[in-house]
Image 1 (cartoon, rainbow, N blue to C red):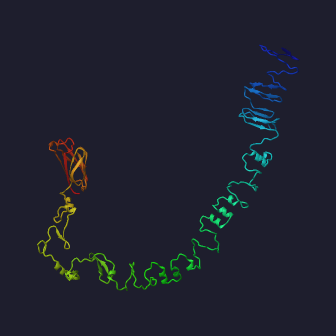
Image 2: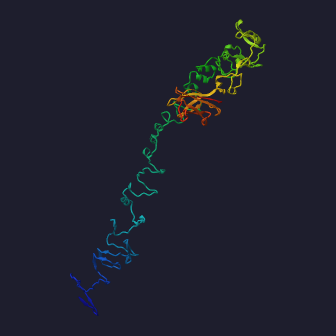
Length: 531
């Protein structure tokens, strides 16, 4: 179809190669919109159109847009009448002075299903704002909103609130200076048992019930009251107490003594006294036939009539007297404690008991005692004796001097006696010896002297250990072996020179060919030297 221009040119309307369909033109004067032209649509409704492959921009005014899908190319940030849609986030930013108006409730719905509905007649409140954004609210309205309030009435603030029958619970602190009507029985905690009852009804019985360390029973006591019979009391500052009636528990006659303190009244009071008469004090008392018992000390300078039976008992075989050259207090001693005179003179005196005179004590001279008790003969021999050989004399004592270890080692004395303890100290005496054998499993020491043990390291190697060591390793050793009836069994014994010590020595036993170590049938060991 061809349309000629009013001035020049032609416009062709071509159908598709395969034509099918109907093009209906409106029954009005209008302008067709071209595919590749820029046109303005007025009062048009696009129902579910798809706009793709282009960037949407420009100004949209009037019209209705519903079910529109924009697909294909990316949408850039666009501005519509001062309002901006931001690409990527979908944020709508209203321009300055712009207003978003909804004819009814405006609801914003998120992709997660959450929604915000804005009703008519209000202003949006911001999260960072205060409650002042809202209209005035009453305490009742606030209580209607809160779900966990306690109590009713007006909202309470800190300064000077008026509370009506509040239950304060357990406040951490409170000042009850102007409070009234606090019930003692239930309003005060921490009271001990019985204290609330006493505060409510302050009787003596209630006070006693509240106390835990009271003494006695009955009514509380105040000055001027009667004490009755107190269980205990301290009367340090008390006066006027009558002894005869004011003090109970006194023994018989004690009150009389306290009222009239005489010796007779004291004696009548005591139940375990001894003797009679006046009370005795320390300085210069006059005692009549007293029995002093055993005093710890006493001075009897002016005493007379002391019987011998009253003297202190002395030790056995002691002599009581003055053993000094001047006046002194007698002492007790024994004969062995007196000064000894080494060579008594013939005129010296000796105390004797004369048996011929019924045992009377007498004295005699030393010469007379010597003459009376001299020895006439010894074993039939009379006259003076001459010391010779090992006998010596010291203060009229015959004695023999024993040789010491050094004397034995010197070996030259002819006047010293040898005791068993030093016999082995002479150089000629064996200091160590032993007889031993190997029984196939253990060493058997048959006899020994000064030997602690004999040990076996291996076949033919033995060690003899000494009880007392030698003074040095330069001592003489001798070892022999036994045979058991067969000369081929004999062993050669050798002393190991390098192993000789002051306290032990090693011995080796070889066969007759000296080619191998063997255990002997029996061995004998002896050593000489100084220890």
